[in-house]
Amino acid sequence: MSDSRNWFDLMPEDRKRRFPGSLRSSNARIEIEGKTLINFASNDYLGLATHAGVKCAAADMIKRQGFGSGASRFISGDAPELYKLEAELAAWKGYEAALVVGSGYLANVGLLDALNDRHGTMFCDRLNHASLVDGSRLSRARVYRYAHRDVEQLSQMMQGSGNGRNMIITDGVFSMDGDCAPVRDLLDLAVKHDGLLLVDDAHGTGVLGSEGRGLLAEEGISGHQRVIEVGTLGKALGSYGAFILGSSEIIEGLKQRLRSLIYSTALPPCAAAAAIVAIRLCRSSDLLQRLSSNMKYFLHAAESRGITLMPSRTAIQPMILGENKTAMRAASSLREAGFFVPAIRPPTVPEGTSRLRITLSAMHKERHIDALLKALKSVI
Ligand SMILES: *Cc1c(COP(=O)(O)O)cnc(C)c1O
Image 1 (cartoon, rainbow, N blue to C red):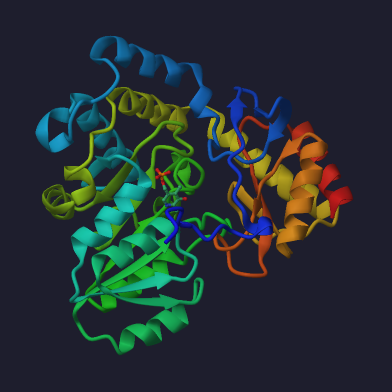
Image 2: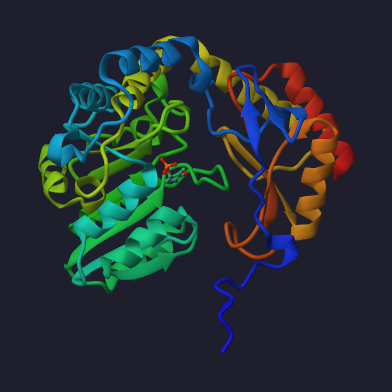
């Protein structure tokens, strides 16, 4: 017997993930392996991660309360800053109550487990984020997956499913596609089948809707008694951590049952302080306006250059190239031309749909966008 076991079947070369060390700066630039590039690969859509006000709020809180929270919220980590953040989130997004948790991944995994058991039934969009997929597995509920955004198919699936605990689960803005879930139709189905609608709007928060409230507010269904919304503080809000929004009853229930909250160290108070300032900036500064004019400018400029993108009105603007190697080669040529745009490959996206994933931010200048599209045109 040999001692050296092979614990991993390593990915073939065209699928291998790389973790490029990177150093960000505040003006849409990123330094990777010694080279400075224009960054089209960040979820920091408003540039809040490096905003002076956000940095100051975090630094002040560290001076007052130190860095780590020292315990689970349930034991002694429940800093007042977390309550303040929850009140701020609930008021901004229009829900009765909010619960701050460690990360979006932890929120989803914990939430699906807490709300379901083997008697529950989940209906999941086929392109849902990995954390929702993992949560549905952990819960041991029955899981059905419907074709991407296919309300018709979902409706037929639900017809046959009886009146157990039914939950419809979807990304709001889809993370690798940039398109939006048909949330109003999904809510109608949830109501009809006496169930709940869970929407993870990690990429809609701070991007869509008035004051950046997100997809559900834009569609007029935030705060509905049968809606649970999840979001992260780590994307447009430029901090770290996540939140769950819903009725007081649901949020109170989750406090009792959410294992990823109860058995995990609380968010550092400085991350909450940073997020509070970030929400205020999102609501009242011109950053959101700058992001949406960049999105418009990008779409218009791409169209006039004859560049075909996936249909998206969000900050995520992917371009399908098909083969892994084609996507990898395009990403590497763009990098040589001075732009950081990642290639996304299976298993993150379905076979044959490898793509470039361009993300826009309020920090980009129109000349950055022009230069990217010019390089893109010559690469493809
Ligand atoms: C990024 C993301 C998450 C994970 O959030 P973190 O706070 O980064 O753990 C969950 N869901 C979706 C749709 C995401 O895009």
